[in-house]
Amino acid sequence: MVTATVLGSGMTALDGTVVGIALPSMGRDLHLAVSGLQWVTTGYLLTLSGFLLLGGALGDRLGRRRVFVVGAIWFAVASLLCGVAPNAGVLIAARALQGVGGALLMPESLAILQASFRERDRARAIGAWSGLGGAATAIGPFLGGVLITAVSWRLIFFINLPVAALVVWISMRHVPESLDPTVSGRLDVTGAALVTVGLGGITYALVQSPDSGWGSVPVLSTLIIGAIALTVFVLYERQTPHPMLLLSMFRSQQFTGANLETFVVYAALAGALFLLPIQLQQVDRYTPLESGIALLPLTLLLLLLSARSGALATRIGPRLQMSVGPLAIGAAFLLLARVGPNTSYLVDVLPAVVIMGLGLAALVAPLTATVLQAAPVEHAGVASAINNDVARAAGLIAVAVLPAAAGITGTSYLHPLVFSAGFHTAMVISALVTASGGVIAFALIRDPARRVRELAALPASLTHASHCALDAPPLGGRRTADDGALRQPMLTATRPADKV
Image: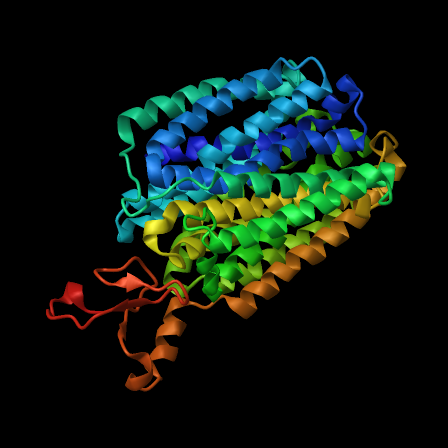
């Protein structure tokens, strides 16, 4: 089961980073400007983020395994179209289709684990999922370098076909079906359309504004349409009887804080990792394979430490790791700001990669577990989809904004000195944004043990109910949406298993 979910989610995560290492080759082959490179990435992220919530809702209604398998097949077909694309337009369109497949795969992978494992085994399973999935993300540059150097950038898409076939085979044989029996009503297709139009309009304006100017009719009109669509989306979700975005989840400070941290950290990561392979290849003259190998220590650290990080967070609470992890990643970005022509890998690149790996290993598993534990267990698919959507929307906006904010436009990536100056600025911006994630965690995230101590200090008349010492799925009571704590009636038995 873990193998299938890791391969499925890892395939989508791998695709994001493996494409990053291929961007310079794609740009030269298809004669793309910086905006074209951005659309190869944002076209995928746009549909991925637009349909993730719908993907989670589909799994809760129709069966998580069923939607997961359909997503794997869809992703494989879209990957084939990417690999045979004759021009930039077809490639970007195929990438958008690929994002829809990813939207079906990603939320279901984690929801399957949340619904299928017992509480005592769930943290370890999620830790393994986080570590191996993170390793798939990190190994993308290395794998991309091998495939591009050996054959062509087109091979990075064809490699998804056998992986998807394996995901389908394992899922049909070993993954149990699960769904939310309490869900009823129609799917929120209107909400999915509104959020996709909103994100698409804003993304188009952000990507095209450096070339066309903010006052141009296409940029200004799409920006206004996007802003209106997102506003209508929030209003619609508040009043529709069957929303795909459960706004009530955000009453939980723990859930809101974890998603805010997800947004800022993943925005900085997406923006920085979009530019880093270009810097290594165009400025430092690395081959695609060499630039992939340069990030290999990141993979090893995630493989070795992520599961242990999840176990540690279970014992001491997630707040410390969620506060320190982003600070370490921010420090790594500051070190990368020194990378330029004729810099040393051992002195300038490797220390940054190692620190980034340590920061990610500390952060990913506790962050994921905190999001799920702060939401009612019966809404595992929706909670997973919201967190994934936040991460992908953050990446979408960052890839659209960061190059222009750093002065990287037009064909500047073909001019090493110009691009390198912009890259240095971008790394400083990314460092500051990432570090803010640590501040958010310190301010908003609370360890479960501390919550229990705080509640125990209150008079009994203010608590009105007993509270479980674990922020976990209920043993027979219900979790409230506003605070994530377990509230249940007086227990009539006193067996050790019933004590809370």
